[in-house]
Structure formats: structure tokens, C-alpha cells
Length: 101
Image (cartoon, rainbow, N blue to C red; front, side, top):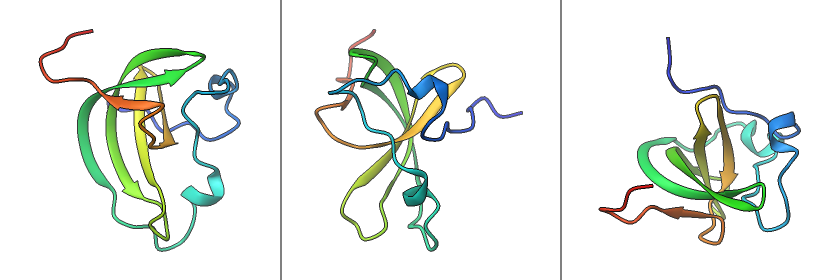
């Protein structure tokens, strides 16, 4: 049994409360493109902006979008919720070392 929830897809009810200035989910068409680059597993604490506020989360993995223009980040912010987001410093930030939430 995996402790990591299956990533939510765009349009899922848990992602509908996103506001302007929040992390942007990656459209299904980008996630489902053939010949995706390798996914790099990562376990790093981050802040992610969701629902108009900053929340603690864990960056589980990331990869380059096809074509290499953007980094995509798989972030888990709740026990039962994770999703792929465009990685931007304005909405996803590493938690500084030595800092606790």
C-alpha cells in the first residue's frame, strides 16, 4: 500500500478552489503527452500557495515538460491530496533548511 496519494487531475473538486496567485495545475494534455522526460523523485519540504494562502507540502517528484520550457512539480499538501503543478518560485518555494512549520 502506497502512502503517496494518486495525483489529482485538473478539474477535480479539490482543485476548483484555486484562486488567482495560486500554484497552477498542469493540464491533462501536458501530463499525457507521449515520450515524457524522466521523472526525478524528490522528497523536499516546500511552501505551496493554494486557496489564497501558503500551505506546507512535500515536493515528491519533478520533471521537465516536453520541450523543456517548464519544470513540473508533484506536490502533496494534504494526507490525501497531491497534484502536478507548474514550478514557479512565486507559488512553490523550498522550506528553508532548519525551519519547522
